Length: 66
Image (tube, rainbow, N blue to C red):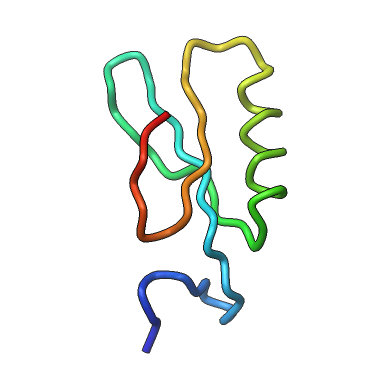
């Protein structure tokens, strides 16, 4: 059984998510990561593409919007 949504199919703990919000306010999980730094690098890379979407990092189980 998976505990609190922090495991992937491979069993690795991935407690950090990158979230994307589009122009209409819809939110999507882009990916799950083992470390906050890894998630932040991904969010920064995606944000640097110049699109209008907003990207941020959340710890799984928390939903704080920037």
